[in-house]
Length: 193
Image (cartoon, one colour):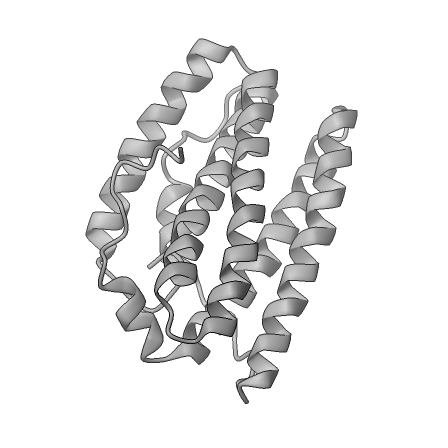
């Protein structure tokens, strides 16, 4: 369903389980950045009422997820810690060229956001299926469903605002590019690492 070209290395969950605090901290910051992305789209593309409506709901949802992750951390005696740079996202953002029409820029942002959500969805599925902490596994199952909805929402908006054939080609090219990033990064105890 997600169309990812390279699945996550099966050993990833084993690495994550060695330091749950680390993955929760990274996850919390990912939720905060997702909310910021939604707000940024509202600010930059306010001429699209349907998009603005969905982005306002998304920003609220992502901040509620941020709070949920903070609550999980608190239960486990973890603290948020400092924000880290997400190397995966940094590399992914280099795929599309700068400039172009406003429509192209919007489509590129939507596709990139959709792919980040798709990879998060895949990782949350793995956590929900393989974590030995059943409470945390259930938590990730619920979030996995949200991520899947976000992924399809971003992709559908990209297709709505751009030429469908062109958008689908860009999506496939982005998926191939993302697979190479996943291969290069190896595996670490982060949501996208």
